[in-house]
Length: 72
Length: 176
Image 1 (cartoon, helix red, strand yellow):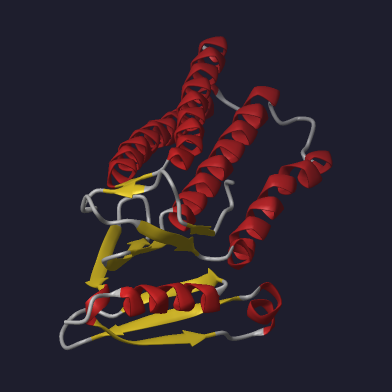
Image 2 (image 1 turned 180 degrees about the horizontal axis):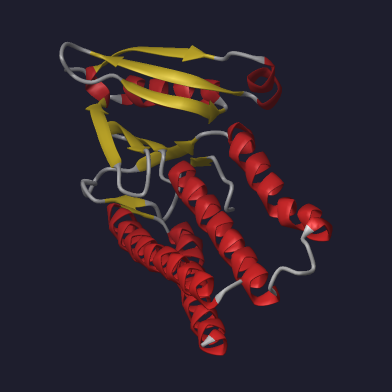
């Protein structure tokens, strides 16, 4: 792959990750709202999964930055 | 239980408009077996990269392939979580005063309709297909008087039990 192709690849990946982070945030906000409307202690497991989604978003972003810096 | 689809007399369940003297008799959501479609699709996409791995050319850059696989599984996780969330928040609630139907279509869309027990005119129960007979689930349509919205619980487990519970609440109502 040429250097330009790598830039394009990382740009697409960065766009995807931005979308993923925004989605994870919206998901968490909506979950909080529905938890207020229909509260049950069982809802806690969904909050855990929502935080896992946030951690995945962070790991994706961190991995992409490391790989991008290695390719510079 | 994470896959509990029928919760009779939930002790700690509350909803926003609940009156002080109102008790929740049951909470129902679709039978887990009705979710088998998206679960099967997710399993297919989980195993796809594992099956495809031997066919990836060795000339492809390792970091690019690794990043792609990471994005792939992150997407699968989010799609699964969203599908589970949609199932989890599609609930029917039967209380001592009213029946509430919460419809969640996506992360951004959710609406609810409710009717008072005293306004119920007819309750229809239907089961269709082999799976519904095997796993004892079905639809319940609660028809109300006049312009008020009808309530539908789709593919809920033990529909006879739910109808019986609603009928018992109606019978216990003081005569008007």
